Image 1: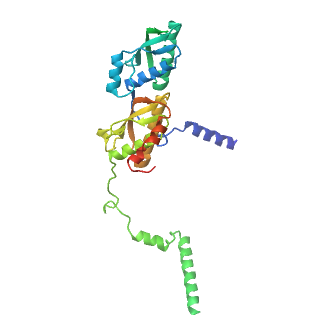
Image 2: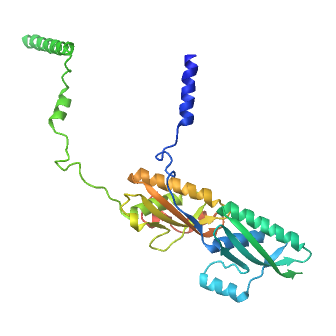
Image 3: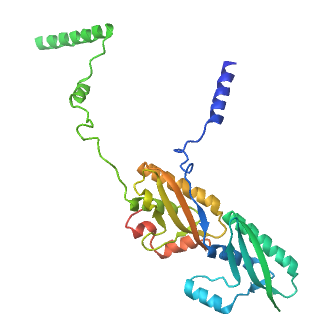
Amino acid sequence: MVASRATQRTVRRRTQRTISPKENPALGVGGQLDFARPVYAEIATRVLRDIRDVKQTAGDVMTGFLGRLLARGPSHPGVQVEERESDVVFHLDVVAKHGANFYDLGLEIQRRIGERVRHMTGRASIVNVNVRGVSL
Amino acid sequence: MADDKRSKRSRKTSRTESASSSRKGEPAPKSAQEVDDTKSPAPSKADGASEGSLDFDPAIITEIAMREASEIEGIAELTGGWRTKGVQVGESNEDGKEGYVLDLRIAVEYGVNCVALTETIRARIAGAILQMTGRKTKAINVHVTAIRERGHREEHHEEGPSLGEEHGIDF
């Protein structure tokens, strides 16, 4: 009986034990996490690349060229990102493959980009898809 | 022979003395070494021996954070200028009394959960700074500036020198 009481006490102690900041230094460490706009654009571009019925993004040629020239990095023609307080808004111009169901394609793009953005950044997204052309 | 007897007697007397003192409840005499230790006075604050300060240059904090960040899975590279190298120590808290404030600019691997990654970054860097300097970290701001392909880090390490090698330090 005494032994069982003792074990109960130890169990209670273990369960009540809180992790001190010394054990877990992350406790009490604040800070912000933010993302540059090209990061969101890069995520959207990569997701679009994986979708079978999307031929390419339809960006302005001059915008793409200038973006590549000035930014000296990967540009994202056809992908515009707008940051709001709680969510991120994507404006996508895509060229779809001939024969694809555009409605389903739009839904799939929205779903996959939303999932990926939420997984990677923890933020919600609004995705506006504009089918600018059809590739034969 | 006579000397031996004397020495035995003296040992006996010393034993009895110590025994009697312990019986009376007095503390046993300390060993010679302990006595010698007590002779030299402990350094007091008045002497100035234990006074002083321990300061850390912000570059040290930056170096600790860089090394720790370079070992975290999911960080492709630290992005920043040649001066900051991706880690910046907050200017208002350079002395670290309130806790350091760090700004990290990183490129992450594609597919990584950045929220979880940030928690890992905070835990590891704050832990390393606490362990090495004894100072707390108030905040770590993480700025994700780019996304890289998985395996970019290995390629980068093969091509160029590591962060430590750049600073002439061996890991």
